[in-house]
Image (cartoon, rainbow, N blue to C red; front, top):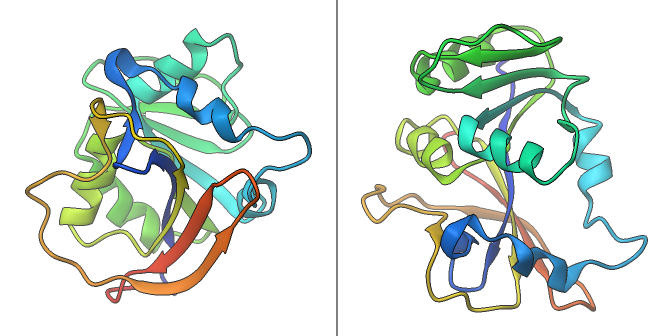
Length: 177
């Protein structure tokens, strides 16, 4: 049985995962004490995380320790770097890595961003599910979640939830999964 590859991500209502200059402040508009929008439950099913170096660096620049240090993590980068604990810096093609990971024993493979990684994996047909949390704000510019040149793909709605903060979370399955 092949492992699931899941994108779990938030975007503005106009489809940006970060504003101009990699600004993530719009995410704070839906912060509410005691509400994590299902993330804690989701992350218990994950044993492997894949993300881009830019996303990794952004998290560290915010003063947080790497939140996935306890999992097998692959940081996609162009620069050779030594492994840190369970965190590996991977310089090969992300599609090949994810194909290899899907064939190994394990639990869910979490794609934590950024947009470049998400779009490469969508184009390769390697994403099984998407959890998309839409933040009720229009940014107007920034880093678009979905590339304009992605092929058309039908999504199957598994569940949609709305929250009193205005956040709407959609859980989709891709038919190729």
